[in-house]
Length: 355
Ligand SMILES: Cc1cc2nc3c(=O)[nH]c(=O)nc-3n(C[C@H](O)[C@H](O)[C@H](O)COP(=O)(O)O)c2cc1C
Image (tube, rainbow, N blue to C red; front, side):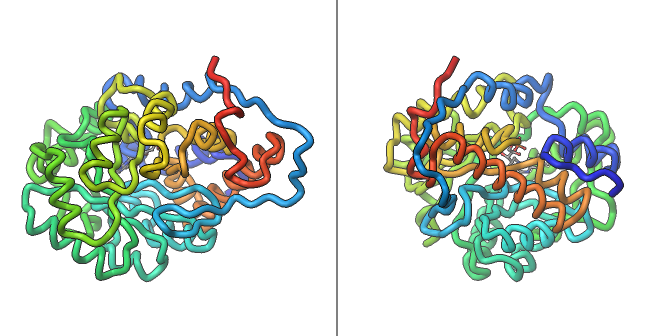
């Protein structure tokens, strides 16, 4: 790498030069007009920090506990499919970087390395579940995740079908012949009119899920469940009622319903409704440590980071992911010091003003 990126936005522009056009479109795109994708980022600009002075910040501690697991900072890697499109080590490299920094990682059902292989590299893992029409297959995935030592399940609820991602449709997105959904030993279909992933969802993923299916899942597993894809306070309360221990406020990185609210805008109402009864995580457009500080001040317990991980992976494998996460941690640490916060408990709603 001739030029050294010094922030996540630079990682993005450099990584774009090193991916195939089909992989780049799959990673970077959002649904339809990509309004929600854009909003996820720009919405952060409307929240301003009101820093506190003279609060003694020489010793700072970013560590936290999420679903009973200690993390060095309130950051997890979001579940993202097909990481071997970025680097031949794919999810294994991502897991090693997470381990090194003592951060969490959520592995996608649609990973290109199997959940068992990935479990060799990190213990702070959650398994993201797509409930398939085939319930026995779904149950087997849950049992395998438990047996491999995963600490939580992350049930994605915002994808009963796949959003219309026009760049993938145009490219007739599919995986190259040497890659597959490793957990299921299944190829992504090839279609001459659609994204192969769209076709896969239509055929395999159950669009009929209701809150009772969350109850079903809670009854077949001992693992805590995080429900990912919540954007409304009433749904957050339902998740709590039906057995979730955490929610992830997410619009799938703007890849599902275009026009859906930016996640940072959805957060305050949700936190207001659920209080401390359930852990609240948020993802979408988080690219700076100050974005994390804002999310924490509004009331999130932790954040998930999506695409920047893929940019790090594409540019420099495990080292690239480690660097992306280290930059974020350094920026969060700086933002906390400059706002008068020595520990995460000091980050409260008084730090934020929405304009
Ligand atoms: C390439 C890609 C693949 C994704 N795959 C999944 C997935 O398999 N399961 C899931 O729940 N979310 C998936 N997501 C959504 C992410 O978990 C996360 O919600 C989103 O990327 C966060 O936004 P950000 O990329 O702006 O940080 C994917 C996102 C991207 C960019």
